[in-house]
Image 1 (cartoon, helix red, strand yellow):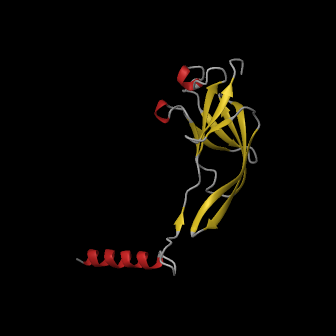
Image 2 (cartoon, helix red, strand yellow):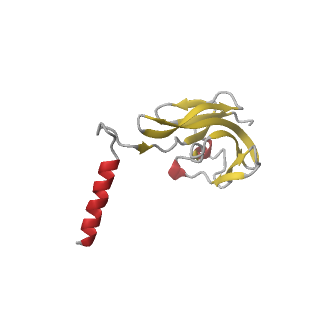
Image 3 (spheres, helix red, strand yellow):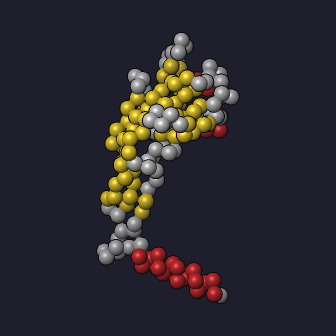
Length: 154
């Protein structure tokens, strides 16, 4: 019974202070968008990990070009559709200069500028700019996946 009273009081506090004077808006925080990459064959459009052209047992590392530190190491797996996901951009604001490395070699440089914004009672990360050192990269707007084309010689 004591816990029910405590929970009721907690709910009342959240309902009271979660709304503004209009009673229409609830404060919110939206997590930053994820950067998702897929390495594809330039001619066929097929995923290079799925076809076996890239070896999924070799790690993909994300290196901060400013500090030289590895910020993420991952193995590309079929359960994530052979895609590379970077979640760290946007939890902090500023300029991010990253290198995506496969088999010890840089295959892509990513340069992102992000800022934390508060609008309409919500806090979120706004991506101001995204640049790559490689041409031909396309963002699939329905899936949010950046398609990175490679030729057989690369």
